[in-house]
Length: 224
Image (cartoon, rainbow, N blue to C red; front, side):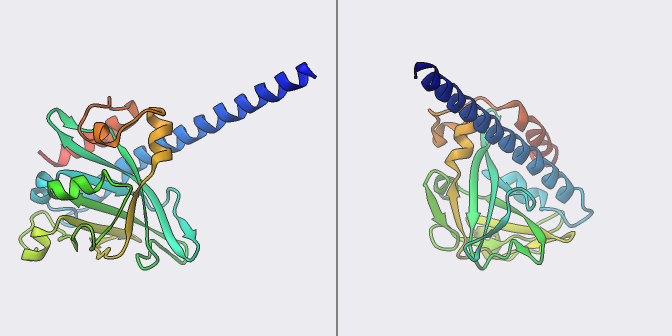
């Protein structure tokens, strides 16, 4: 009887460790894919995110379209990361999810990459809540595209969050009103451990994992 209990306990521990390793691998993959998406977008001639807007952004969120995107209960759901500026560079990535039936991440098998620029302190602080609605709790506008922001309207340039999408090779600003952004606590837990504070992550108190170095390099390449 004792041997059976020990066997079951050992098996449960093995399954738990395997699940943790799998979740962490998913987090690493998400971070690497975010770096690839950002680089591909910024390397598109005259169609990337305006550099002056990127230079002013407090945080950058990237939701890769082919990482954990699927229809869920009639809506759309995607997972990605966000990193914020600190006094010594970009923060470790905070993991987040976005959903909303009207966003249209994935139609007919075509996935969509999303990028959001958080332009001020209020937008940054919204990331510390469990969830917030774009266009409700934080103002959002379709971001202008091009090397400069001259084509942007006053609304676009004063919005708290500027949003972009890329589908089938086409990159453009996109309205995300009504979509809900929420904390992906399971992602944070698998990457950083049980005791992790989102404020500590975004303010640079949590060491940057090696998997985020490529993303930071790409962000530094295109912004001050």
